Length: 53
Image (cartoon, rainbow, N blue to C red; front, side, top):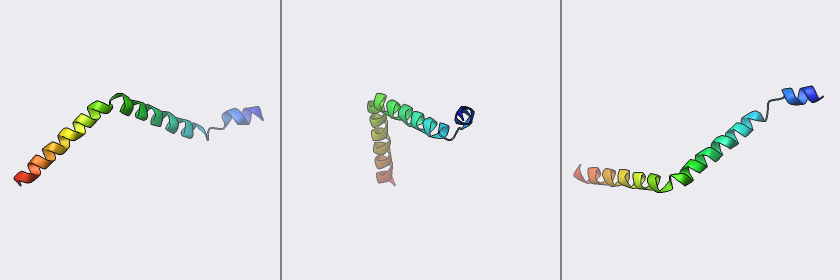
């Protein structure tokens, strides 16, 4: 019974997904201001180019 329990790998995918999400959320929290500035610059560029067309 213990051997089957340790050989079962169904939950490993779930654990990996949770760890990836935690890392991504952590990166967003750490670089929040930089990401906000980058997005704002991109939208300003898009708006300025759109008015010239």
